Each structure stands twice: as C-alpha cells, then as structure tokens.
Length: 119
Length: 111
Image (cartoon, rainbow over all chains, first blue to last red):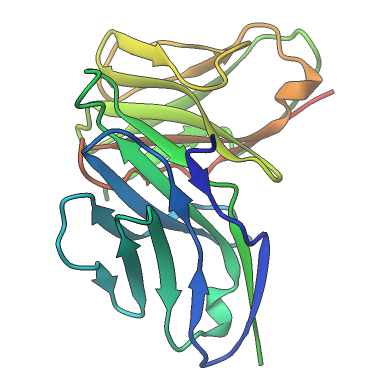
C-alpha cells in the first residue's frame, strides 16, 4: 500500500477562494509527523506546515491549515484566500520514527498536487 | 544564513562517467538524506544518514553510493551513471522531529 496518497494530480482555484488539497497516509507506527511542502516552478522545496501524531489541535500557519483526522488517516492542507503566488506543486509527506521497530527516520512523499490559481 | 548547499545545480554527463554531487549543511544537523524527484512519482529517498559514519538505504538506492565522513557533508556518488538516473536530486537535513531543510536541487541529465 502507498504510504502517502495524494489523489488530485491537478487542481484549479480562483483567486481569493479557499482550496483543500487531499492527503491520506498509512502507517502502523504510533509516532509520526505529517508535513506539507510547496514546490514553485523554480524548483525549491518550501516547508509549509507540520502536524505531529500526538498533537491535539490542527496546525495552522498563516493562510495554511492542516485538517488532521487521525482515525481516517488524513491530513488535508487548506489554503485560505488563494493568491496567484500559491500556484505550485504541493507535496504531502510523512515522517515515521519507527518506535515499534527501532531505528531509522524516514520521510516519505506523496506524488504531489499541481495547484493553479486563476484570476 | 542556515542552509543546505548542493552543487552543481545542473549537470549533463555521459553514461558510465563517475560523478559526485556535493551536499553541505551549516546547521549541525545529524540527519541528512538524498531524494530524487521524477514526474508522477514524487520524491523518493535514495539514502539517508543518522549521523557521521551511519548511512542506510532508502527506497531507491541502486546505482548510488553515499558517505558521511563529516557531520556537515553528505555527497552522493554515481559510480557509473545510466540514463535512468536522469532526474532532479535533492539533499536535505534536519533535526529528528522538525521539518527537513532542502537544498536547491541538482538537475542531472545522463546521455
């Protein structure tokens, strides 16, 4: 099974609207972290937001929020008030700490969602 | 400025010619990792290192080597590059429960 699944290869949103990018994950490790990264056309990877598996509240960073539903194993990224500069590829990633099996520290990425913000 | 520096940014080479992509970080991170990014496949981990002299395979290690002789450096070595190693490569470093810091990427073309 895929560790991280992003089912939306591409999304369009109008400027100033909110958009939700989906991410589901699969792990048996009780301790893990979920990340979202943005990759603009220039190619660099920009960290957006982090959610720990034991965090009680959903993470927020400015216009970004993470809708964390642990029982459903989903970690959707919500971007409010979209801007033209939000057009980019977005990656969901999971870090497993291998508490049960011991050792390692692996960050697994999904295949990404290409977001295009339109006027 | 805290950063991960990888060089070169662009590299075109021929099949079989050994090459090294360098990666250096100035944040005293113990954890470093290499990824390759291919269309439709996202980023896949090649190798990672938990500390000096401690390295381990990721998901796609075939055809690659790494070394970690110093904390700050984690070079990626392709002993005999092949066209299927044409890709965008990222080096990253981080603390155990913090986001990874990525380098700006190396676009490698093997002809």
